[in-house]
Amino acid sequence: MAVIRDKGEMRSWSRSRRKAGGGLALVPTMGYLHRGHLSLVEEAKKRAQFAVVSIYVNPGQFAPTEDLDSYPSDLQGDLRRLAEMGVDAVFCPTNLYDYGEGRGVVGDGERESFAGAGSIGGGDVGREGKLLSCVEDRGGEGAGHETWIRVERLEKGLCGSSRPVFFRGVATVVAKLFNIVEPDVVVFGKKDYQQWRIIRRMVRDLDFAIDVVGLEVVREIDGLAMSSRNVLLSPTERQQALSISESLLKAKVAVQNGETSCEGLKASVTRSITQAGGRVDYAEIVDQENLGVVKRIRSPVVFCVAAWFGKVRLIDNVEISL
Image 1: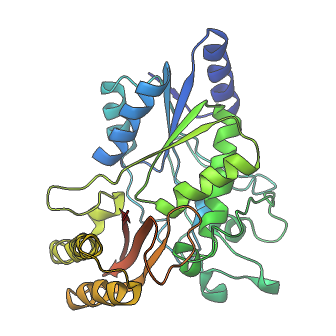
Image 2: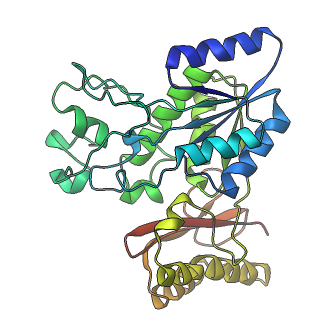
């Protein structure tokens, strides 16, 4: 298994495999891999001759007040698991942004630190009302990187409401990975449902010749959606967090039994999570395709939830079809 850190080397590796006549599938991750990630890798291996996994904790999708520095990491463990699965290459760059004048350069295997930042505009908006991510915060005035991709309508609402820099950063870094790795297929998990839809729309609108595959949510035995952040939960918070999946399942059953009013369903899920000790960021029912909010269920929808347990923010969803 090739472990590649340099952008040019990654691009050369991909092109040499393509010249040999093989298709290439990419699984973008931020590392600390769990069984959900590995299911994406398994799918990638089915869809192309060569499978590449990227591991990069992207500062462009974090506001300075968010959990970039505490995001869990185990690069050596990740590499071991991927080698055992027969992955062909892992792309794990130390930095994908230009901070200008030599800024943003870190040592091999290190992660840039943005600790102590984040008092401007709640960590989301800087001077002149401009969005502020850890990239701008690190680079300061005259930061080298200034090009961002926005999927304007789909990024509104859901996670985009409370994390205004998030999807701008996601779309940009994924586009960068597409330009570096040049895959034929990319595989995402639908736990991050809004992210999956945004990437599909970006690929359509910008004419990337890439098939965007989405796989169903992978859950722990007790129903909790698998997430790298789960490890940050205390035992009590871990138990409380089960209220998300349990209440979403009850809502799906209610719809299957004839309930179509979204207000009652959302109130029930919010109440269950709050009573369990969580703090709901949002509980929203939206159209599966355009993510528009619906008031009454008449077509396929997805019920999306984000909630805080302690300092950990978790997301989950269920797709519901009549």
